[in-house]
Image 1 (cartoon, rainbow, N blue to C red):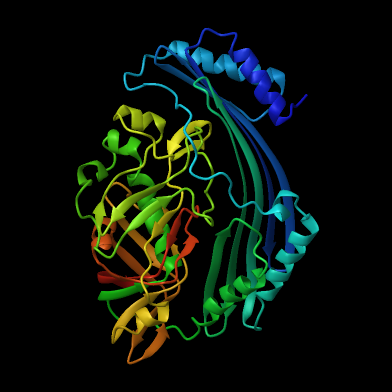
Image 2: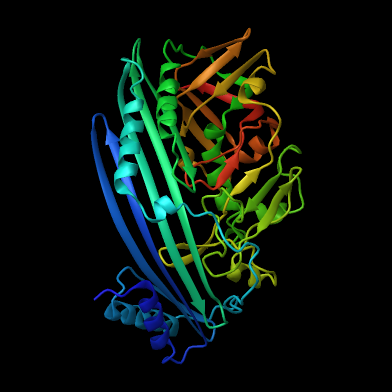
Length: 447
């Protein structure tokens, strides 16, 4: 029989206390996820209840971690036994100090969308269908694909050092993809994240179609181009997210997988670039009172005027260096990993249009790019395909057929010469809030 979250936590703690362990931690979570998918004129919906428990036991610097997605007494007991067995069989970790201790949180609550928490499935489904159908704004739009997802979650963390805390949150995600056939075949996409239901959802479905329609009449870039490139926020977001998620991890720095350790205190970006990892920001999709170990979230200046100030820490990596955690512990299949919350870029003062009009001639990349996930995060090398590129010259913006954008993230950061005022939470996981940017010395080639 499946236990409630509180029953499961209570039972796990009672069983763990029977074991001769030095430290223990129990993490239990419950998420309710509603997903709408539209393809052409057909739709389907799905509601999932996801429950899990992670147990971490420590015996003389030997760590054992086990995970279960079934909250029955038998499954929980098996999980505890597995974690204990793993801890007993491992060699001591010389870098282990202790589980985290309680600290006073910086915030006492986060924004919760009650309409997601007590989800009206009919309302969200009707909204998603309306948005999907709104994407057919002209006869040339031959297909629309859409994903709309609403999530409510609760998580509890208890450890032997006195941490007893709870997080609660809501999230909303949308992604629209439109295809147009006119003088050729063109595509457009629009996606975004929010902590609450986006009431004007049809606006974004129409914007996806508009992106595809403005590509009609696209011509091929005649020759490779090197020079000024203006990247819309959604076009640069995933590149920044993959690069910083990897390199800002203190664990990867300590294991010599990331070069950021040797770059702290040095200028790694244009002086126009300042970035704060803010786990407390009101609109951040990953904002919470505590991280996944029960350490309070915080604001951490990462880059200030181009200079790398720090990397991000969880409890283990921080104590390994005699520091305090920055509150960046996350969970991945029960294991603790270091992740950014919301990397917020300091805005400039210009709109996307004003950035473009700063130049007599430039390449403009709108929408999303393909292939950011293939980046070599450690070295920074990337090659992506842009499906919504334009060339701006003599005051006119003309669509181009797909182009390839190649480069290196370490060079890209130093070649940022302007940032816009249109910051948006976007990217693969929604952990960057970035405006449109202008690059110098950027390389573009026909795809």
